[in-house]
Length: 248
Image (cartoon, rainbow, N blue to C red):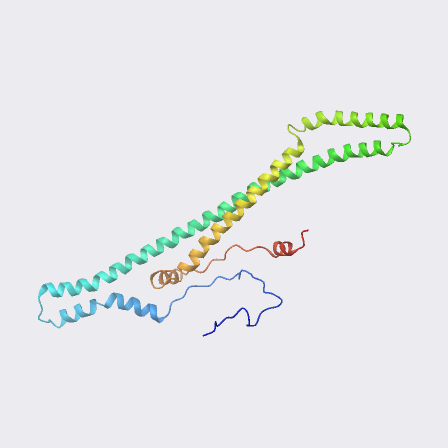
């Protein structure tokens, strides 16, 4: 039998197909099968015991007690399972909140880093522009046909760099470019941490979306409490367009 989906001979999309996260929360619902299941759980042994008691069936007391017990135990177990399921969802919600807060924490750190980089780059650009403008002006006055003039200009250029070194050493406490490189390295690290935190967040959301449809107990509890699916992290349209853009 051939594969129902054949990637070699089947119809293909020449233009490709974009992947998007659907921004929609789906409510959990239950049908008649869930109601029948719950009715069965609570009546599987209760009805026979009630009939035997009302009809005064001639059986030993221990047998009648066993029938009644068989009717009570399934309902009690099911009730405990529902409590555990609700506790599970409440704890999972807190885990999702913790994952989201972790992302916010990294984002806040990254904003601080980028603000520092912006200030350092601005100061460094002003410093470099001042120095390079002076050097360019010095070089523009070099006359290759005059040896004495060339040596004089070279001496002036050396003097400019000599005066530049202490300014770099004392600006502000470290060299500006080293601070910028360090800040950019921290930014790269934080971006990796944000990506990892978003992956953990999506995994937790996926667990939630899967478990609320775990029939019978968890789905019934989710439906009775009005739970809905959760939306995982999705990149913005701007980020997607930048990712598709030509970099090199």
